[in-house]
Length: 537
Ligand code: GLN
Image (cartoon, rainbow, N blue to C red; front, top):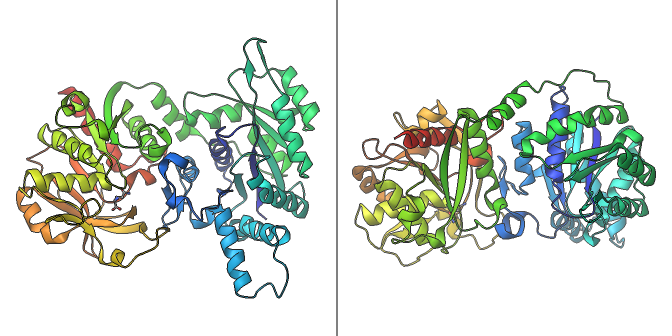
């Protein structure tokens, strides 16, 4: 039987529930247990696909094409697993299902209510992955903060789950903040006491408290929290700020969170956790032997979470080379002919980021021109690849009007154009080309050298594509289509000919989504290698 662990958050948002959930999962996985994580988000959007990155950070995409919360990226990166549509549920999706059932007449004349109908649907989804029989432990992270109106149906569902399954099969971990008052010189426990009371009011007694803190938590404070919050003495866990999110599993292990969880859930597993690879990775990021600076050109640079997976992919690739990768954000709206040299000349490589709409687009195109002409290693992702195609069309092929029809519907040279299938789409949500698609790689390309395979699968999230009408012209001038989806003949990867540039790669898919701690993505790995070579020169 699958054991359930719920992770709730109190006091404030942004405490890092996703990282704590992923870290605990890592520790349990390291003992040979089969673990996965799911996230329940209390907003009404059916999925985060329609959200601006400024709202919730990047939208993470799974193999099966689900547009999900960025925490699923942490789960995949920490655990080296694939998640799916079932791992992320929102209030919108729950209500959508219940309302569709009501319209179908499934409730037989009953009044449809939050309790039991919404909570039943939440519980059904909470149990879905457990019912597959594929997991020993299922961790469920609840988005939002305890006390929010939106969270109530979820809290009630957790209460019912605990009641149904019993305390040996289902536990609740509450993540809170211990603020430090410098005037008093102490950590304060009151906000935690209040948020535990809030949970208790809804019938939930947390089993473990994980306390985010900027200062060490003394045994005295732990004892006080245990007493006032009604948890076992050993079940107050310190979670101090860490230099790297990848250190959190080790920090939590030092607090013995994994053995406490195993005891509470009566899991007879006394295998020693195998964290060798994880620790090697930590060692490599802590003791870099060299450093490179990579420019990340995008328009959402004010919010670090907007390019989360790209940032993390650089950490993984940097560890591989034992190289510190300094990722410097460059706002695409600040780049123009006059500023580009100052902004990019000192970069060892440049990545042009994904995106939608035309804000900052000319800056991205200018950046590509600069790195192409100055032979700076380049990776363009999705819109970044499209910019590389537009730039080449304008400045090498002489199609001065070239553009993507996303930005300019009337361009004479729509080198990036809407796919046929997309022309009929009228709805926004879930209608892009989404999820994993196959791609065949050409001999002698940077891509095939990186992947060491001629068939790959990568995740997509876009509506526009390379326009094959122009393919011959591009290839004759040296921008080669080296990755093709054979079913649809869509161009997935373009590269500049080797004799024109040392490392210039544009990909229509999102490689960053598949980079893992113990398996850095081949393209990021080779981009960092190219950056190291560039730096040596
Ligand atoms: N806006 C582009 C498209 O829809 C690129 C999308 C992206 O970068 N994810 O095709």
